Amino acid sequence: MYSSRGWKIATVTVFTIVLGAGRISGLAHAQNTPTDKVAVPESALNSLIGETDRHFHTAADLYAKGEAQGSASEIRAAAALIRFEAARAISEDAARLTTTSNSLDELARSIEDGNVASRRDLELVFARADLALAAHYRTLASKALAAKDRSDAGRWLKAAGDSVDEAAAWTGQSPSGAEVQAWDQMHALQEKIRTSANWSAEEARKGIGYLGTQIQYLGQQMQNFSSSAKSKNQ
Image 1 (cartoon, rainbow, N blue to C red):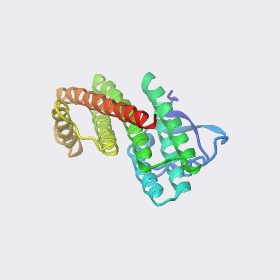
Image 2 (image 1 turned 45 degrees about the vertical axis):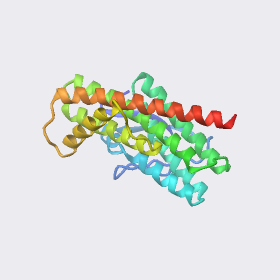
Image 3 (image 1 turned 90 degrees about the horizontal axis):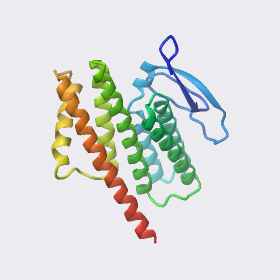
């Protein structure tokens, strides 16, 4: 919810919150850390878009080096950022993001306990998190477009597209068949937004459709990966 001054109220598990230069650091390292209500300006939340994957990439690199504690800390930082997003998400998106943040916390504990077999296990969790973020940003883009808020629509379209790209990179999957055109068209729209080139509301509506196609495709790929993994373990 918003206060009269337009601040976002987010309930997150944190140890120390540092808002500045678009980053949050010093996240909780224990499950029993008290939960605090932190008022965060909407502009600060927007500046944190993309930070989640910075933590994911650092976590993956630290894991590969055998630095379990450092990797777990980066994953918990990403989980906290996703909780901020969940606080401003809508219905199903909020539930999905909350589930995602909990899964990241579980992954962090598993890394510390030495129960993660390979970097691939991290990558698939990160891909699911990026897909959850992409769906959330896509919803916000649709709302902004309906409200004829061009600035917000552009921000959310770019954020959703970037999250889809990150998810694809973590899975190692490239689009095929019908997905290729949607992928290319969305990237063309993202480039226009990045370079401040003119783009129309109709292009944005199509972009939202393209994002839906990409999210559905990658979501199916994730299900296939999970089914394959279960079969190998049986």
